Length: 353
Ligand code: AHM
Ligand code: MG
Image (cartoon, rainbow, N blue to C red; front, side, top):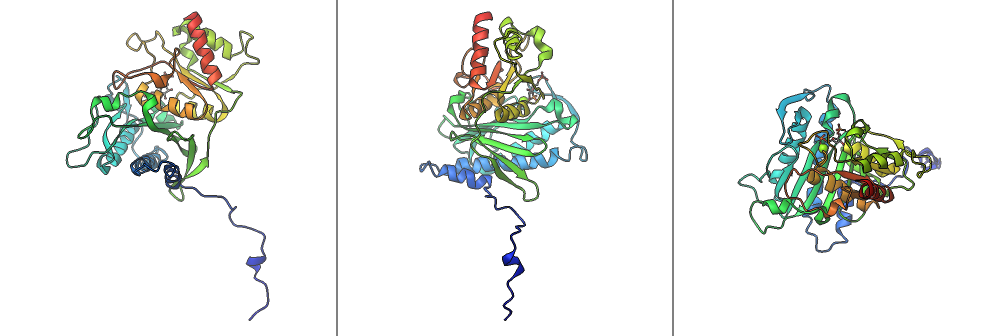
């Protein structure tokens, strides 16, 4: 036998750094352990959403190569043009989640009414609400877009989900999250135990933990708003915008402005860097006096995530999470980010309207 030491055994070089690899499934299961009463249904549901996200990401990253860009020529319930990727993302979420037996029903920004579980399939204890492809005005330009979701426990006892199962305030969310399809695909979620982010490794086909325990940093760096609409805003919102820019002299140096026009992208950046995103009520469209963003599909899930990361979300008067929805597609003014900034926005609105 050779006494020559092995080159490999002696080598200090390592082909791969000794990183800890945590899949999204392992992470959700781990969180579930602190809830002995948990049945595993929520864990599986989150994994189903992650699977849907992988399918959507697979399409978005090849968008110029496969036939998914452009508009369908149809309008959704909001009167907005439906992009073809909107349909693909919506159909993916519905098809993946319909037959699992984990849901009593779904509601989507793209569907006028509750999406029932098809006949022949069992119903389950949760309802799932989603904006399948947020930022869809950006899809044709290779700009980050995303999926936003919220999960509530059903209120009705059995059978198909009823409207009261869906019209719950954000405080009752049991989980929420979003997926950003950007230069990488990142899945961010919370089940009330902090906020955690996972990056899709396309080679492995798994979301791997990359952003554990996200906290919104302080001081904030950015404000994000479509300032092209400033002339339509109330006096309080305009004066708050002067404040964040440092024009009024109260805010030392002011904040830098960043606005993508995809809520997921603007929110995600501000979550990691600190800042405030707002889409206030405006007088641009008399049919939409309450702002543009939807309470159930966009604002409540993001408010839940922000709160879990140490931030805060408001409609300009009080917490988004306290609003009890009265209709599926209800809109609301939305201010979200670092608590001190959002509370300052509330103070300006209270004082100046
Ligand atoms: P969408 O869900 O139809 O894409 O609309 C919501 C989007 C948000 O992502 C974004 O913050 C906002 O609309 C941008 O609107 P605007 O172009 O008016 O600034
Ligand atoms: Mg949206």
